[in-house]
Length: 257
Ligand SMILES: *Cc1c(COP(=O)(O)O)cnc(C)c1O
Image (cartoon, rainbow, N blue to C red; front, top):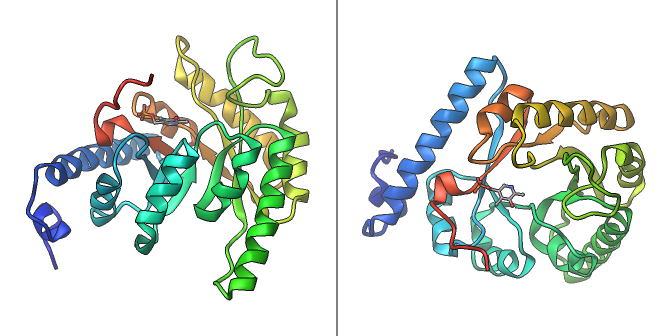
């Protein structure tokens, strides 16, 4: 068996430095996750490596290092990478703001959407899933699983209904019921980003209370997608089942324009 510390052996390519850098960063994050889970006496969450803004070649290296779950937040970029890396059997998680007119594209490659935050998006995703399944049937392609949907909530104090970046906590039951009733969708659980300038532990505890209410609607909706590079320890302590880690694995992203 190849020694996984030898990235040249894993990638089968001359080591250009990037593979060893990503390997070292990935192992450091995995060690933090393991330590946080042990400290909290919780099972280790699934690590989703957020590869937005980084090239498909980086995603390929990560796959060779054993990463199975990747996160992206822009449809155009994600669709191109997923097409290029089709043979790798990665699970693509869509984690960004999603316009309803992109639903059709997203369901072609994504196994999950972590940013389901309003009723019209539920409708569009369900319609897109029906169309996608019909298209696969017609082409004789293998069927696809239900799309795993995470309800995204804003934990900002004073957030307004219909704002960007998540539903209001009081919308939890209604949105959960809509996803449960929708064809082609599976309610996986909840998702949030901790607001800036407030302790993440408080935000994640709030998210866990919302998760509890969502589970009252759908007992199978046990997933909690929380925790980024800067707050993964707090998220694990609160009970996150899925972490979305970008910069601590890939390095600093180019500045967003
Ligand atoms: C970019 C992004 C992440 C990853 O953030 P890092 O701080 O780079 O780990 C996680 N979740 C969402 C929704 C993101 O957009």
